[in-house]
Amino acid sequence: MTTTELLAPVTDDDGAPFWEYTARGELRVQACANTECGELRFPPRPCCPHCRSFDSEWRRMSGKGRIWSYVFPHPPLLPAYAEMAPYNAIVVELAEAPRIRLVGNLVTEAGAPWNSVDPARLKIGAKVQVVFAQQGEFTVPQWVLER
Image 1 (cartoon, rainbow, N blue to C red):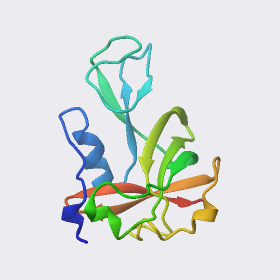
Image 2: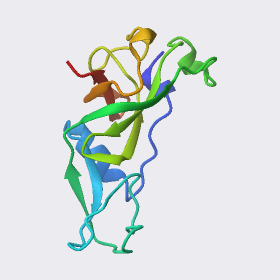
Image 3: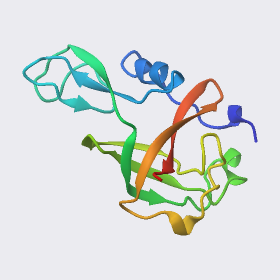
């Protein structure tokens, strides 16, 4: 399998900065730049859903979180994913922004195969830390168990 066979993230004007930051090894989340609001939001969008401001900024996150949910897709729907099965897909709740949840894979180290973690080690609530791996043209967030 090559990374070009995997689905690539969709980028638009609102989300492009997210991928620019991941390429630098930073996890950032869009925030309302209205000083009276400041709400974090993900996925990125042009307007704050809380105060309707069009002003935004990108705030750096610690990269710490916890597994909020997970699944092992059986069978994978796309052929490029079949050789990695069974692999995990996790939803991570960010530590400093519990309403923000990101999807990724729990791996043993950055760039490790998606099936590199023993499925028995996945637990709801397990603490994780972001790492970054190259996948085709993109640097994607992955997660490792916090030590």
